[in-house]
Length: 210
Image 1 (cartoon, one colour):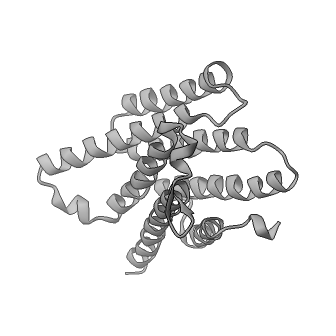
Image 2 (cartoon, one colour):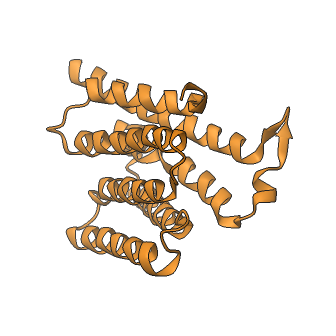
């Protein structure tokens, strides 16, 4: 099974362990982030076992995406009213379930579920950022909470770009030295994603011990 591992899976494992060790479940954002990292860890390493046993993994990743995106939506929607939180989260979950059984189905990875969640989060992030700019609350952009909210944005945009075209020829285009476009973007956005999460965790530890 070792040959099925890659640097991103190792990064996922390392970040999960760092989060498990340093994050405090009694804090709301910490608790949700632990669940996000747990979801990523289980998705990545269960997929290794599935591939080793030659079991289809598309449903595993679809369910993982639903949980992952919903938790990120919950985190960012904590900055909005309760009604918006309920509307966006429940709306996204309902669409994802309908998509799994009625639209794209369970025979393939649900691309629409990924892209919709990613777009919802990105739009909410931009709206929140502009609202703080408008109020001239510039300290928000230097806060650790902003680091947390920023963490998944590039990941969402990069992977949505890859999934959105549904073009295998584009994804397998060689960028350099036999590195495919999909691999390049996937690794780049994941490294940024987990690096920012680690920065957030380390800063939270420093703030707590200051």
